[in-house]
Length: 305
Image (cartoon, rainbow, N blue to C red; front, side, top):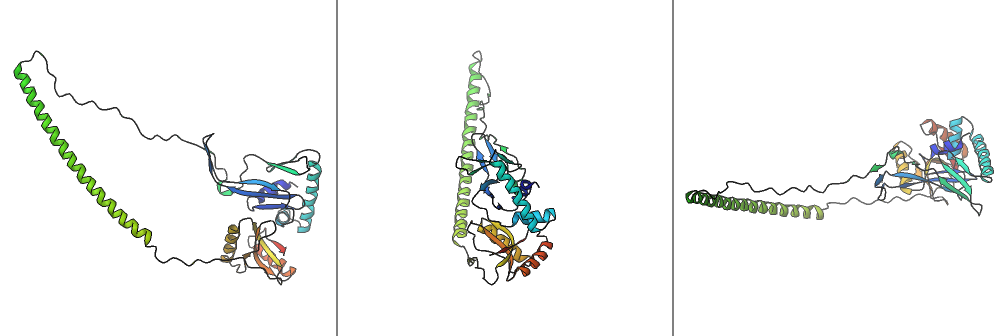
């Protein structure tokens, strides 16, 4: 049984997958970032880590193995336990390599040290997104100064009459240039006044939009409810380190018709488990779990709390 492949698959759907008696694989969200040294943009991702202290059975792996391999839950737990014994025996002698996850080895204190494989990304939303190279942005284009046009040239051999004509023509051109500049200045002044009026109107509209907020909605805060000791059996839909994600899944299940769906109080390991419903007896819980699994939730499992 390739247990590592099943763990790799489950990490796309859960933030934590516990291997009873061995430890837990965790994925944490990392935002997109820019590597200035390499001039590359990297997409958002979920990075893999390992915690040897979390070893309690959360039922996710065993339920998945039972469904995938077509065996009972108890048989799946036994198969996983045998694989873990083999892993521990191998890591005592040499490095333990788990394909598509990473490698384990013991340090001087006898603790497991995990090194994840490079390039792993368990965020399905950015799966297969490549790195993007930074592009140089041009801030402007320098233009050569245009040379003034040449209207006429004077030759020394011309007569004084021709020089007089040229002087008159130069005076006419100068007068035309002054008139043109005056007209342009007047046009610029008119445009400046129009822009000032538009700016004043924008300031007034901005003041109204900022300070006239209207009626604000009532803030509603929902706190996780404590589970009654009379209903200790819960059908679990998922486990999250983030309380926001747990609340989102509970609301989604309620909209699908599971009116009793809720997220349970935080576990000692720091996780919030989302429950379809809670029951007083194990038989009621397992009967309800069978119906839930037939409703496209094959990974549901029963927790006694």
